[in-house]
Length: 299
Figure: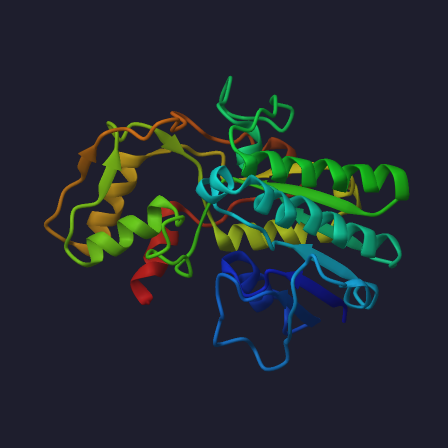
């Protein structure tokens, strides 16, 4: 049994990590309750209400594995408050790394973002693709990556960075203005409203189920060759927004149709990951998009 510390453990991804690991491990959640207060935390999971910028040294020192999902995740808020974004995503991460430097961790898993790439020069996007973030959020996540990789080289800390593309799960809050297109489509179609696409709907995205993300975390914890590396976390399959809308409408069997509005300024046209590096590690995305979306019907 290992002691696993999960930052942001009440959030979308963190909560699924808790669900996966708590039965066979001692799981401790660090969360400042800023975006969620999950009610159904398993009884054997300790929840510590603390910010990652606070003194977390004892919590980290008593852990075997640290999975860092806590972050300021709003691109829009980062544009309005870049200093706030950096405090959370850069200084918060650095605070954890410093605590980890004095600990004896087996793994430090850092959640980055595909936002580090900016506008793709070519697709599918490989990890070596130029990183040119277009927002303070993308820049702060990239800075966190660089710190993690440096701590591996300079201090021997066993860090791994993963860059998720478009994660989805039923725990995304559709009322949150920062939620992804899937939760918004699901909510509208469920209520017999037209799903809204900005532009012609032919822009593509790489949608990955949170369950596949959790699989990847398990993999990078298990594999020594993952240490000091960065991995795209995606399916390697592109889906147009129009295709996504059609699947959602079919699932609910509603008499609605996709509604198009003016394109969003700065919207990336095509985004799909090259996941060959993760596949070489043993990663296999298991949840197809339609199968993953069917899970939303159960809530």
